[in-house]
Image 1 (tube, rainbow, N blue to C red):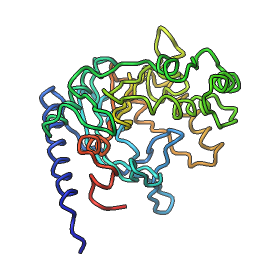
Image 2 (cartoon, rainbow, N blue to C red; image 1 turned 45 degrees about the vertical axis):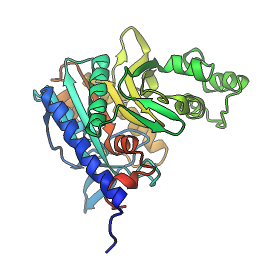
Image 3 (cartoon, rainbow, N blue to C red; image 1 turned 90 degrees about the horizontal axis):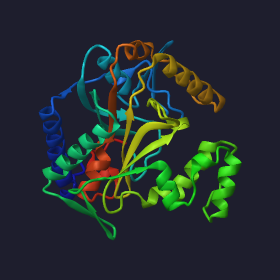
Image 4 (cartoon, rainbow, N blue to C red; image 1 turned 180 degrees about the vertical axis):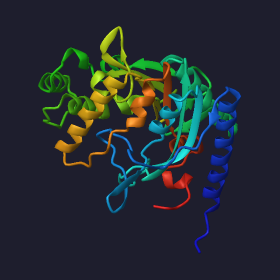
Length: 327
């Protein structure tokens, strides 16, 4: 039997302390914890996510990629403030920051908007740091301040600051690619898809500069990347969604939740068609979720990667350093 290295064992103890403090923080704010199923009929429709299939004859089930659908179904049944800390499964290669099985924290708050959710997220991240007696962490040559206000930056402003490009001003793939290349930005893709060009610029020029000295909420994503979030009523070209970046990690993804079942069905059908066109598995639409959306009140929700947060706070170099071995 291989023994666990002492440093890894220390990190597992720190992980336990972080989770205790997160639970205490959410419980104290009138959230209650629920345990959603991990075996589901519809694991998530996003184009970039692939689920592990469990089959027996014609009965197809999947390991969920997120507890989102189950939690929103509960919100449609009258819950107001809920959270879950659960294993999730995505059929992707192992990397420094990803494991096919990983731990997700999700919470949802009815009556809260995207900016109220940012405040809650700051509280949770600071609580996790407090569990280890931290107010800052060293990341490479930088010191990441966890005590002061987190940065709030729109996607448009981040592109203008770090790439010198306003993606909204160039609505075609060719136009966005051409202006970016003229500004010296590396855009190796010749894809005709605007989102592909957008993400090349984001990955090469924007993301590496985010959250270096304080965590950054990057909010106001293009409408084409709305996923399950509402569009901004004052600017339908922008989705009410944020991601949290800190010390080289993408830690969280959050939505001002779309609660229009008609619009959500349209998005699901478009995602199904896109998956089919790429030869990917097409999953059933979750009809229980769509029915629940009709009963939901305005809500904001977030998914935060527990393993990555623990990596950030403990200085771990690889996700395997903060988990028990499995994959």
